Length: 609
Image (cartoon, rainbow, N blue to C red):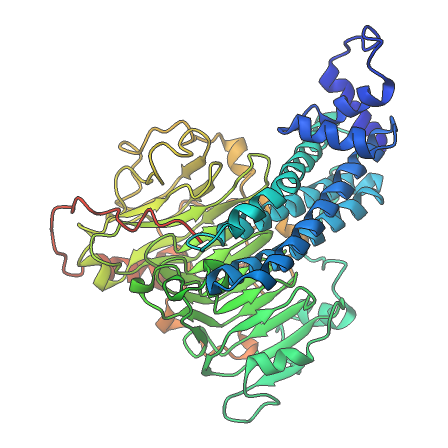
């Protein structure tokens, strides 16, 4: 079937033209040119396949060859990084190289998954396989880009050396995504009965969940009767007093739901959920009671990627009732509270506090429900496919005259299946910010990379969000290629009349809007239902005036019995939302009207290292 699809793509690209007219083109070279036709780096694609494909004309084998050679290139780049580390004395450069090695290992994993998936396609799961391939390849591109970004402000030529070492790998990764995207487009046009019909019902549980996990996730009082696998408590009432120590006993690479209950306390430690720690669940006593806190930052010589208080790499991660923070402050520039690379990760009733670059949704798919994210500049950034449902985006006071763009999505390739979707959220400002809102103007976001994608729907936008809505990154960078859209938002800042008119700002049809609902955009019907998390898979009912998020002071105690709703029927109505009241009260705080300073964007141009 896959061979048929691949052949179909090549035939489609050639549009029936006779290929026998040029006798000098052999059958194998012709096959190579067909497979490489949709790619951006055709010469790299063709040269690679002609050299490594052993004259095969099998299009599926050629596609596999693209992936196998890419894997080798990434492996070689990782070795180069290790060699350079051993020769390097500058601390920031050593960190950047070590970061590169880590990220190349992750990228290799994405390519390995993709290569294995190509070898086991099943007809009835073809659409699912192609979706996964695009997610994995998008993540690989993010890993490669983050590797190179780490060399900002480093000494010597290590950055240029790694850029050269990764050049072919990067081009081949983009080529692989182009080929898979072309296959996906062709399959979508085929309309084969039954091919695209496999979707879990709301009451189903994903196949990877073990029997114990099924019981935990399906019971009406989710987790209430379950004994956690590990308890962390600073007062000594659990098995561990630190989260870091507890993670040493988490099973590695097992399809087993593993619950870590973290009792109330301020945990000043750095936590990493490694790639091998899959199906891990963190449960706290509330985002204002169980707090994980750090203060690493860019100004102190640490790459943005490595500043995270909590880093989550293992897939299928869930966090409930926990606060995460980076307390470095605005003066320290980039300082991440949480970095997420986990696929199919869920955050419910959590809080993310920081200043610049608070929440780094780096790659893969995530779902955030009833969460609060606070910060100053780009405080929600990354290259994931993430949906934020009923969340609060809280703008904080920045340094003097800094602008406050809320989002900075970083899609590098237009074929990546990534972007931010905000659904039924509330944008609000802390009182300290509202006092300086005239000189530190807020915007919905700006394009970190060329194909930045952000959709804001059914969200409350206050008056301090500027009428133009969006902020450029630098000059006209990305303004023609980004993808921004606003849909049925409310509030004094939601009017579209004075919005920027960049080519990349879109007006979506009703059909297009549906594509950005959770079920379609991140396939969340397959992995969110049954987790004890309020969830709407499609469009929100009506046109809410604000999010249904609970304010920090209104959170329940966070006991295990507090997550009982699996379909959203018990969530707070928009009209009664404490967040709506919070936003209203904050907007009436005393304001200081000062003409915008000419140096407003001094720090908004700081790129992400």
